[in-house]
Amino acid sequence: MKQRPILAITMGDPAGIGSEIIVKTLSKKEYYDLARPLVIGDADRMKESLGFVEENLEINVVSLVEEAKFTYGTIDVLHIDIEGAATVPYGKVNAIAGKAAVNYIFKSIEMANNREVDAVVTGPINKESMHLAGYKNYPGHTEIFAEKTNTKDYAMMLYTDGYYVIHVSTHCSLREACDRATKTRVKKVIELAHDMIKTYSIDNPLIAVAGLNPHSGEGGAFGDEEIKEIIPAIEEAQKEGIEVTGPIPPDSIFYRAMKGQFKVIVVMYHDQGHIPVKVINFEDGVNVTLGLPIIRTSVDHGTAFGKAGKGTASPASMEAAYKLAAEMALKKFYLK
Image (cartoon, rainbow, N blue to C red; front, side):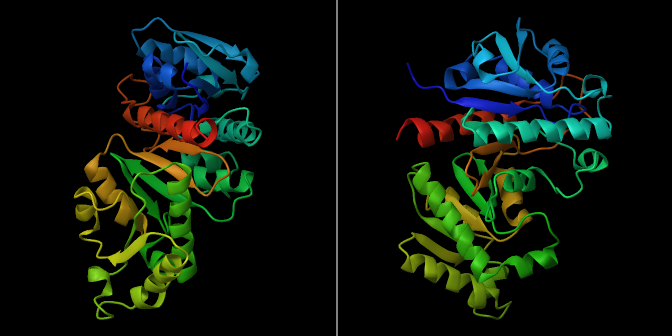
């Protein structure tokens, strides 16, 4: 029988759509054929969300991985007891929900660090709720994972339709993003992309690096960041044997990718990568944190408070994040 990695799935903010999209995903047998899912969250909210699907499913509450059944028809939930989490109102910012969401993440990282699970798939969180709960030092998931795994160098990668898009910077102002596009950081992100290609056996190893400025600066006419920072980073990586090219003008790099020239793209800032990825496939995007010692994939959307509790949320991104986590875990741990 094919090996099935164990995936920890965090429920996300209890006031959001996390429990719904998890139930909708796990209502399909194909996902149990790919992996062994273990939800980390609130068992009562998960039971409530069973009403969003027609399939006859049940919740199996566990306290240890060994107690999970990992069989279709039963959703195994490692219950984290946060008082009030099961009854927070849907669609509203809430400190209890923020506390619960962060504690689900903490538990998933602990389990991944101990290799009790092979990968973590994270549901959506609300940063305002998280900060109300006292976790103001975390801008989001990525920083929590970095701190709890003692990771210094990491990068956000978006994956969709066979394209791997890694960001030099993400959640900062555009002005600050220009300052962050240094030779050291660009080189590190190229290295993280290269490690990802080797670890997960990407069939096209060429890394394409986008320029920062229009026309990639056009020889300094529209900015000199390419000359001073980006080109030297690329040249150093090439000397180390990494297959990397660029800088390619940002307005054509994704066109060339879609023509089949490369699959792995390093972009300089948030919207340079997010806009084309969401145009290519808005619903099925997956957020991956590169550089961690553990595998972490995530939905590429928020808590969708406007849809929470209504049964209308699409599980497409959760399904894609689940599939990618299973594939990555299989390649990293079971096919070596």
